[in-house]
Length: 424
Ligand code: PLP
Image (cartoon, rainbow, N blue to C red; front, side, top):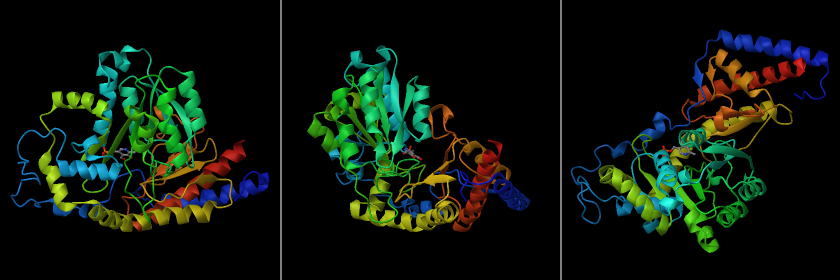
């Protein structure tokens, strides 16, 4: 289907046929959901051995009684696992509670309120604060900024990472820029992996930016490959080579490895930043949940076991991604109705409709019993200026449900596009 050169009569025929198809779908009274970027119950069950795994032995490798207070940095073996995921050293890496998002919030708060480099460096004392947000991106990053009064400016995501010309220009033009959000591997939602060249340019940003500039490197999908593990250049190494290691804050978690609500989160940063962040953490807790960290170490003791575990996740996820991509390929390849990437990992497929159609597609799908992430959610303030991006999250429904939901999605995209063209 190609709308640009279609005659009015052709468009009217398509609209009549698609409307009939759509009404037939509505009559089926479906109830399907493609909104939830979380592991399915089947995936969570891969880690159910966590339950009872300690069998009364609470001692960690160095003899620490994990039931007691203390050990604010996290268990050494858990820090080593976090370091393996992030490509950092154990000394640079902390293992904490269940949520990396919490660690991101804490780092932002520390930067705003106290400053990573002493009270004078607190962003809150320096007037307006702005973050660069590659879009489409992860809505919860935007919510954190909103909550702390940080303005957001967008740059487009390309197929190899953010538009670095725009990022560098913004940093040079706008002295209120304090940081940038990055999801460098299987970016949420586009699935893009940052190229070596982009990583290298990001590592140089600290030379262009105001003092105190921070890169929030949220590597949530570092080991979430669907097939062969894909490489990502090491940002900490690149920053050290550039002399900018104080700009980089790295995050990961086991949320989509073990149990999403009961995992371990990791944060890695330079010695200078750690000094500040340890003081910040130490004031609010006498140590993280080391018993849970030890349970994780008994289940996944090293990088090899992690790789095997992630292959089991991939075996569950792959058919769901295949169902999405097969539906998009057969409906839209060669058409002018939409664009998408084929991700090699992560949790999402990002689909761009013709400009101005995303909200209509989401509404049509909802009325036909298929929930989609609200249009605009992948942009700061929920506003997609093109009204084009839709995030598809296929991990939770069964394969049959994904197939059914995609049949509806495809019909809704076609119908919304044809109706918009007819009205134009
Ligand atoms: N970062 C990204 C990019 C995510 O997509 C998600 C969850 O969807 C998270 C962070 C949440 O991580 P956590 O469960 O460790 O807080």
